Image 1: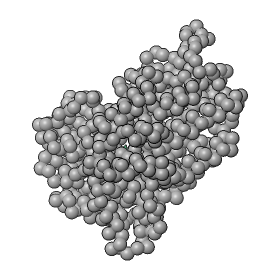
Image 2: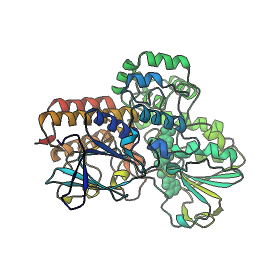
Image 3: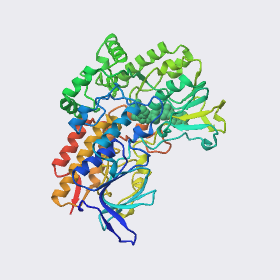
Length: 547
Ligand code: N01
């Protein structure tokens, strides 16, 4: 372990700053990592590509962007005063409120001084002789660090459509995940939205309110549950704050990072009336959550017939809301419910009753080209003033692949992962000592309340570094057999569910050529935490610790 002071070395003639840890990304994960490592006395440099901190909540400034986990559960738990002093205003806070929160945290813990904005890390190369990471940025900076912590986000590498001509379009183009800083006015304009995932579902109703004409290009219909957002009930806020320790513990021990009463029966073990009464209660309850419909019965995510009962209930609601039967039919998903990311929406289906909104089914007539003036499908030419790409992300691995990460012997991480990511616990990779991936592939990450998973990973990594220091250990590296076993386990648990049966970014199928594997661990955050804690308790079983 190095000392905690910064110093300079000049092995190559060029001055290289030496520090203890580089953290890539200044979202919720990167900022908490900085806080924790600083608390251990380490020197830390955070690099962030954006003009501001906030990660996902910095980039996703599109109209309607809001989280779909309750505000009282989607925040940091590490500081009891912080969690008491911050007042949430809505059940599901909008992006500006989340960005205010993260900026408040940065100021409160004096984090900004170690965050360098507008700086993208381009390479991280392991120097075996020095047992250090050499980090290069697009600003020409090179820094040497004992630890490289990738807090690059799971959904931060935007994906466009795979058709030619994107750059030829003469109107305005937007990707929901890279939205401009200033307000965008769509009034009087002809707007296209491509994509009907979480981002599309949120942006479509708001753009429809002002655009002269909105055309939505849908490839796969999605199950959209009512968000039921509302001003936060002050009594609810007081109650949760009065028992936050117990609430946090329950969330950490749960399946998805949001504690729910455990289901005890299967959907097919109860009568149709009872089942539908449950689904209706969830649909109508303004306090229900995204996971309510997923976890009400034991078998929704594992049994196709059980799953179909929830799916049909939602299809029936769509038919009730959407007045044109042909449009309603297009909006009704045919696939499994909940195993492609389910979505919360506000007035989503009702938006298709507006006279200025048209739905185009690009599964029947695919997009073929972006032109100077709009879009072409196999059947029709469209003219637009604006195109909004709500086309998602190269999830879980995209942001890591974007950095040239090279471990022992110069081996590239992206080559090692050519057939899918191989990690130990989603945290570490054999051949890449002292490199940690916060909510990396193979961890619960996107299959959980991200704040619960981020804090668990950061705490675990900080404890590991602290242990290394106390034992005089220089490097910690996942063993190849341990990561093989873990990766096999991630796939095996995934195969026990319906997740691999549908195309989705959970299995990488949204990016042409991406290996089709389970990218996140569906074993539950509680069970996963126990496993990580056991590994630590067993002297970091599965890792090689070297002096
Ligand atoms: O991206 P997506 P997203 N031609 O991948 C379509 C989180 N999130 O940004 O389904 C035509 O889900 C694609 O069609 P298909 C959340 O975890 C959370 O919406 O592949 N269409 C799909 O409809 C979420 O899951 C929140 O057939 C094309 C859409 O684009 C994740 O981020 C809010 C196409 C992409 O949907 C990603 O959500 C926002 C093509 N060539 C995001 N390519 C909240 O917390 C893609 N599509 C509420």
